[in-house]
Image 1 (cartoon, each protein chain N blue to C red):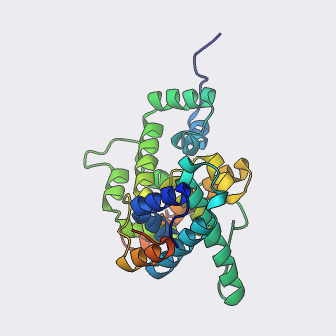
Image 2 (cartoon, helix red, strand yellow):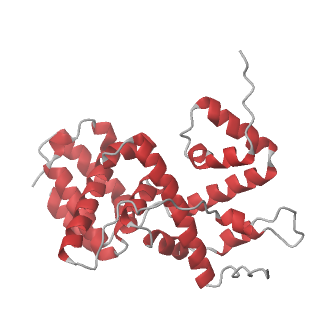
Length: 201
Length: 80
């Protein structure tokens, strides 16, 4: 297949210069290199064949993100049907209680020996963040990737996922709360922070 | 017209913090959170913490695409 239009040429150039970024986003969504490669290749193929659905050639990036995200969600849903132990969770039931790592660590008075919350961040590695992100339900991971990795605005996430903006706002808030809980638990498991002592009653 | 931002307490400011960091608040609320952060050391520290954590979630700008993937893309687009 050769580029048959200027739109194809623009798409080709965009992919060439953003392939690393596309792969990086796919890695965040799928959590493994093999599936990430498939996701990028499928995304490019769909985009290439469906170039006529690109309404604004200056917005190739968000258009590709939309194709990738929707394809990822659709493949995850299919996987759930194929393998009974798999589950696609768009948004888990229930309201998470407010949780903040900062609140767990913050000392209301200045400590001469340092700043616990900054020390916590200093200890974190990229793999710790990935572990927490990876443990989120799919639907929560998707909104965090779109907002925090891709930098999309709420209305762009809403368009991408075909959801009302209000749902994006609340889902993102819940996803970030759960992400902090997962990261905190991961940090406890790895010994990055001390298990809080249970106060005697 | 009164341009002074409305006063928020800490709970109100924290509730709006994610949207403030996302730059998604309408102006009266954005200014109110900004004013609160200016006056409140604890909330400012929390904002800095969440902002830094979010930067870590964003991660490295991009990963290196494997050669095998480049070859697959080349077959799809028929060039580069």
